[in-house]
Length: 274
Length: 335
Image (cartoon, rainbow over all chains, first blue to last red; front, side, top):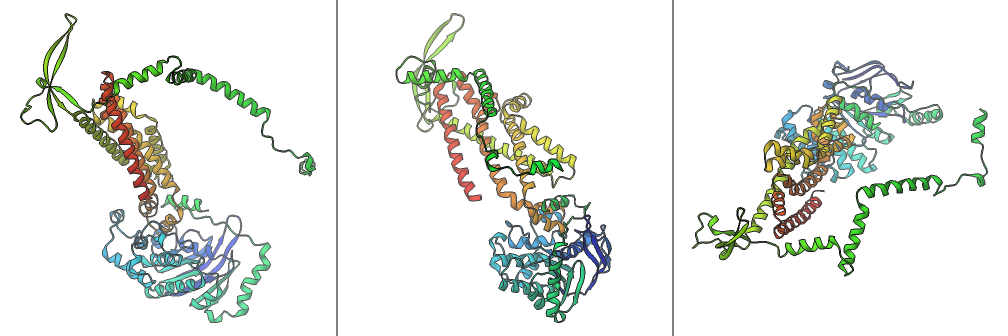
């Protein structure tokens, strides 16, 4: 399904963020990426998304090699849930979810905000799957609580029927109870839609609870790869502890996005974010 | 290495350089500024303005005599009572049914004076006049409405120009740097041309009337509005835009869904302001013959009909106040 074949990434400043990672994800797998800060989790995710180019190695999605040329094609089968959500605050919940199919929808339909009933019903279905109710539908996204906004972001991610959903610390800003229920929604949505999820987390207990498979990275290398039941206490301790000793030599890489010629405005956005 | 250590050597705190508010440099600067201001103030007759105004104030309390106060009282005595009625000689009107006069109007006997150039003398003949008590007020109100319409259409056309130009002039959505520079250039060109001057030219081209006024308003304000639009687009939050574009949506769709909802309130506020401003400016544009209430104002002013002028000024004043009131209400609602 999603195959990393000997993928490495060296940043211009010489930091090796990802080192010879070879992983194969199966369809419908809920895979949690663990690892200390700077271990290469984000780099790995951004390489799937096309924001970062691998220095060497191949990434294959559903039998198609990820290259600059077919990036836009492949982006359509990948959805991303960002840590800061990036919903459009003044847009209604329904339309925020519908923005998930913007790349597929007709141009003039988009301009006048007139989406087919079929698509709107799909959005409603997804929203109810993640636990929102009808009265939320026409509210502005900014009027919802943090957890509800996160659910809208999840619904948006599944709107385009993606094969892969990348979730970058989706519960970083939520309280434990809310985190658990949001992760639950995410997992259920992934199961009903048959999507593979690659989700970075910082909380070990959530990873153990929700993951079908845990991939732990340390210094850009795969440290552990297997079901949560194999992740014993000793491994957990070592994953974060060793990094502690390396603290002085470690440096955080600055993410430089790949320039995408087809979307000139995107480059500006990246620069502004950085 | 040696100099480094010297610079970095710690000095005793008694020797530290403290902050000085007034230095010789400040005094010199103030002196130069004073000289320049006096020169420029004399150029613009600011000194005379001060003298004349104080003389007027003194004269108002009974000390001395002042040209300014005389001017004011001359205008005041002729402006009041304000002229609301219209008085027209019956023989000049056609098809007036004396049995069914318009509401509240009546026929009055009066004297018609005519001047003969050949003999340099006035002749007086008896004549009948039709008097409409609020006839002139009605006419002025109608002209004010026309002025408001001019402002409205000026705003509409300026929106139609500035919306596409604003998008092209937003750095992150412009298709090419050259297009960006051209759009920005065009916008500042529009902005830099004052309405009155544009209207002068347009009156030459289109003739007297509101066309020239509307187009002049549209040209100037499209420059202002376009720049506002472009700046708002550039300053919209980048996160949602990135989220949509990294999912593969094309720039126009990103603009529609991640940028427009965000900038809409600000745009509405700008458009409202421009509309308000356009109406205020439209009242003046008539002075160069570009339609609206200004044309009537100019005509009456040149005939020294100050009581009519007073009516026009009163209506303009009331309109502007009412407009401001409503736009404030609307603004509170949209934001």
